[in-house]
Length: 396
Image 1: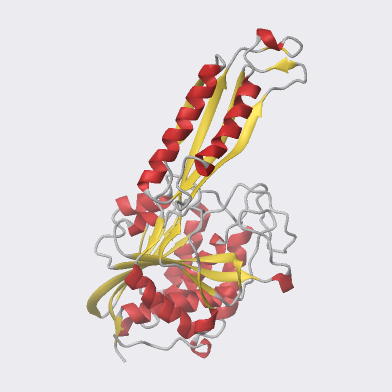
Image 2: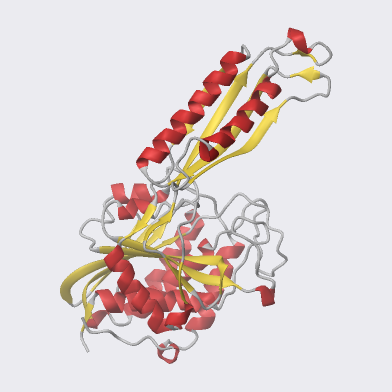
């Protein structure tokens, strides 16, 4: 393999400014999961302007661009997600969301812009490429069952040798790149528990089956799943995030609803946590004469980075930002449907540092004031291109 350089000076005039403009346009016009019609149209129009790409729409709101080299070779897939979140933005940017209640609060606007810029740079070298690069602009990362599994089912990974993805990370300082070997992101499962009791007057609790009291005991005992029923060396999170019941200060409600999430690595831990949660609900409701409905939805598979591919990407990252700025990050309990691609081919997912306290960029992902340092965009573009340089053959 013959690596090519990717110096800032080699970028076409105006591309750095265009990269930021693309991000800001996408931020201004966010769309929710499975609703990315205008976003997909914008991506298609932009890619069409580059020339040399074969475009397709495996689903109504996704775009795949194929760059086929002059000679046969390996196939590398590069992925970016495009969907926004149902969050009311509190930033006061000129390019803040123009759609109330919908916001790019996780950096997907940046991911899309970075992959567009990488597609432009790599397309300009098409005549030197051996093999193929597939640029995957994916819909619906934020909403299970997710867009990745749909695209895999549509055949976008057929024949692919490797898949590589990036995520802008506000928890990492701008200038750093976070690399994880093996486990990176957990399986994010969700549960809903409906407790059914017998409502009544709050002054006569002995005549009711108090669903709030039952629900409170469930919440307290769920904490034991991690602290007492799971090996301390296993990674597991069980969080109750919603408790809805009642509408009056003097009425015991006959229904209470609990919702939450279970995050884990490993099928056995995942299965045991679900079974223990169900046992707790069964036991407490039975003890107090209540009934229940239990809905448990399996989320994405864990993101597990391929060791050999990760080693290559770590080398590429070190060449770009210096080895001291390449950080080995521990597994996190967030979820990512990039794992669907990894079920098919070796894949690696990395974090691009994008936080900057000096600029007030400190808010976490999914926060109404989330943003990122836009200088991180160039790092992401350069790493996409360097990955292609290292994994594919190029003519000198």
